[in-house]
Length: 342
Length: 107
Image (cartoon, rainbow over all chains, first blue to last red):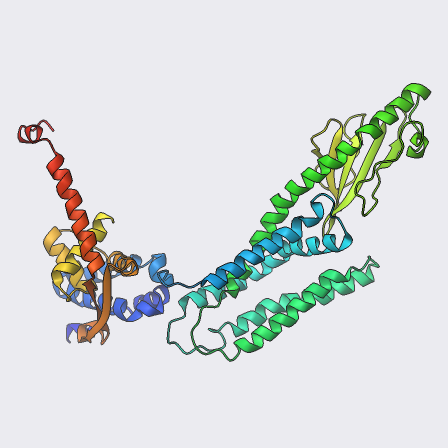
């Protein structure tokens, strides 16, 4: 039997094909076989096989697995990714910036922040799809798996289930229906269906950046929701708290004169205050006042995201009685706290 | 450029168009007495090709390669210039060593 017929284990060659990028298959498989046959004659089968496994392990390099030398993303793809990131960040933060808290902006912000949590379901699909995109070979004839057609539908199915379910739940629970997020999602779905149909006919290799977007969007939305929204909210929260300084001074003046706190803030109007402060001029959110025996509380609320409301409380008798499921935090001013309520 | 990258580039240059994965490993073992894994050599070759230091093209297939073609690598003008610069830099460093200290084993 000739030495060329003494082949290396077929699983090792199969593993090599699985590991190494298809564009390198021919030369690297050839090198591995040539080295194996050369070692076989010099050191025998046992050592030759051991050396083959060592060479196989040495292929575990990103450059050989994904062919990272190839320029996958063109400038237009990078620009799209940057614009998506910017749009998500701006949409999430917008209602928490000073003087811009319309219901539409809140709805869009909730939608953008929700992308962070709901988008996580896309990650396994996007990861497999992206690996296939990376492993596609120039000149290869694409089928409906390798061109991403089936993966796009797999990614769209959760959206097609989530939107009607959410709509029905909102109606069944008799919650206020905000049509803006649904309108945006429907427009996006229509656009995606149009793009997926075009993808069906794609047979020639060209890198598709969509799985990368599907991976990056939830990460950006989550990061924005966790840090940028909190940062912007802290600024407007502090500004709103500052507005209450004359109000708190007026309440204390009232107590000095009458020996007790007022029953309502309206009692302050005229003598102690010309006008009660408002949280923002558009929504006319005023501070709620609650009188205790020897203390009082001021509080205001605003939407935070899909399922939570931020409650900001002033309590001159120490830590307020928190009714939400979330931890309370100091709001940066004496006697002020804030927490998120369900 | 790392030491291993420079060694592989030198071997590609001296093999003058006959360098491919296994021949580079064999030449490296023969001339430097050090072994190298196929993955390590291929990684360096791909990286150097990306930097424009070498070019490559498919050659002939053989039985021992299971009918698969070799990919031959050749040094480019940019690769030659890089090697020359590295050599000049090393020569400068050698020339900068104080002769007195070197000759009497002080350095």
